[in-house]
Length: 104
Image (cartoon, rainbow, N blue to C red):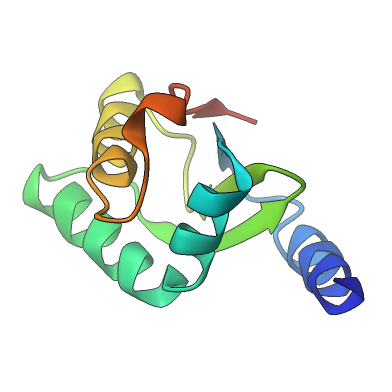
């Protein structure tokens, strides 16, 4: 648990000046997303590129029961919807427990 806290602090410091998208979810969903973060970043970027968005996701990290996705620019509503829909469609994630994503 201490390692996770240090990793979370490291990512927070590294991404301090980047726009962030916040997703609130339970611990089980958090583990499902964080365990395959690289795959999810690639898939999110593919979806954003498909709609010709200028936004790209950089990192996914966790902080308490939150998943934070850093992006290169502040996401518009359409970008938030795409990311929210993708996260809700992940196989091992209970979509009913995820609140709508918002900027942090």
